[in-house]
Amino acid sequence: MPKPNILYIHSHDTGRYLQPYGHAIPTPNLQRLAERGVLFRRAYCAAPTCSPSRAALLTGQAAHSAGMLGLANRGFVLRDFRQHIIHTLKAAGYTSALAGIQHLTSAQFHRGAEAVGYDRVLTTDHRRAQIAAADFIRSKPAEPFWLTVGFFETHREYPTEHDVMPNYVLPPALFPDTPGTRQDMANYVAMARILDDKIGHVLAELDESGLRENTLVIYTTDHGLAFPDMKCNLTDHGIGVALIMDGPAPFSGGRVVDNLVSHIDIFPTLCDLLAIAPPDWLQGTSILPLLHGEAQSIRDEVFAEVNYHAAYEPKRAVRTERYKYIRRYDGRESPVLPNIDDGLTKSAWLDAGYADSHVAPERLYDTILDPGERVNLIDSAEHADVLTDLRARLERWMRATDDPLLRGHIPAPPGAVANDPDGLSPRGPLKEL
Image (cartoon, rainbow, N blue to C red):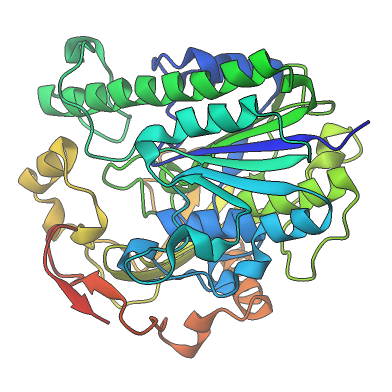
């Protein structure tokens, strides 16, 4: 059987707020993809901020190991583009193409998309991503291909002119049910529909071309919604992501996987699938044993990190089947407001005094009894052993991955810029780091 094509579709800031995850958000094309393929209910990103998340997935390692410590559009860049999966696939006979957003480098600070090493850059205009991707598929390349299709949706700013009626929309459970939060979520729903239409355009061409049966489609997103306490946060609201894989067996059958998996597991999974020797920098684990029924689980925990987003906010987390431990390293005990995208829900929280709220330097949550991660058990004598265990796991991981935070501060590359952590908005003044 010929090597499968790989179609990698990613969106911005979508979390799991899509129809296949049970939300009243009509995304029928993604729903059909899930019903054909495999839906991962407990997939997590390695860094709930845009460029570091993508870098971790595409290099199969922690964001800090890949050197992606902040946003490409703020001057951060991948340390070694040869670690991007397209170069491992190229050695195995694959051609690679990009349509839309890649977010690992910026033409403003570095060489842009050409630096990554794609064989073909079809377009970097996210507005034409689905058209360029469909044209590429229609051409039926002779070689097996890796095609990245990167969409801007569902990043803010959300559309405000649409037919989604906010009176009948429910905001995420973290937020009060008010006219403002309903309108904010209705705007998100409208953009999610746009995303799904664009994905549908690409998948329709895959069907029309006759390539569908030998193409592995991977859909995911970088992190949680661009709402307070979601994007750029290490709770499940921030690191929980949609992941759907559809293709030749074992990626078929409308299956659901409830096991912990990380974005960094995708690269080693593809190596396993294609019988490619995995590069020595990979830190993830192949998912195939789960899908073949050869293992009950592939990992005991997932790790995640934040370094720079709009502003500096170093923090780390470890999540097991039941518990989550989060630690901050900047000495702050208050929110970093520039790391929350502006919007109606942020305004509602600010009006209620969120800027003066306390954020503990260490947090421990029981994700079964407290799935909203609101009751901090850090001082609970009953959970002292759990806390000791998770602190030790996090420290071992940081040492094993040579986390620069162990040396006290995360360095920024020359020329990188960020907001003041004491500011209010990511649109505020920038300063060179």
